[in-house]
Image (cartoon, rainbow, N blue to C red; front, side, top):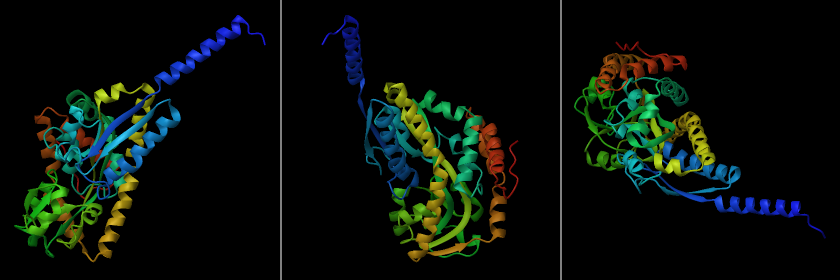
Length: 357
């Protein structure tokens, strides 16, 4: 068999290309974690069960590389109030967390909390919040400029209600009762005269059991998942709203080390994680309510009149928080105004007309 110089040259080039391809193929290992556990916290469940396997699948199928994840949920690597910093410092490459545990650094990112009695449907809430992020790029850019990380996608909590250790009928019954919450939602309790106590989900069961507080502002998925119904069996549906206040972020240095095609997949899967969050949270809300009924919790509904009065008592809260954010050098008024409008555009009828001056 004869080989021409041209054929031999082509073979050499082809072989070199194969060797280069093999040499450039890498397996990247990323540490990913959250302070809440996988299971009771839906944003963590979606991180573990959707984001992680989808990134692995797409990188393997669409590139010459592979991604492996070291997963640390439930505070195994960083607690709920430590995840932003863990991503910033590179202890985690990717972190999932609630902005509510960064009341100073991410004060304005908690804007849905500042307009209580908002969208009851999580998909509607996610749509409204995404519209605000698209309209106010500062919300996304600040993660990179201040905290050395890339925002991959948003997530949230399903509709907030109130669980208590003792039954109550009138809002006046809550006066003086200690009630736990994440922080940004504690002002919701002022109307009832309750005593707000800042806490976290991992501390909730023991604190309810020992009387550190006697109630929790909590969505049903977590109220069921963390078994709060055992020490605190009375659950009242109030409808403070679904809150899209969670995020999935990646350390900027770790992101920059990824090949462009892997970066693209990480961003696309992060947005897909966000896009499925509303339906995931709505399903969790339904499972939570049904599950609480099955385990024998007492579920009540607040009257429309009481709910309207409660909302009216907080009518100045959105503007108050907007001005506070403005004073911190953040675009508070612009963000709050856009959120109120975005929720209405998503189909939600606010129970009262909040005004941002």
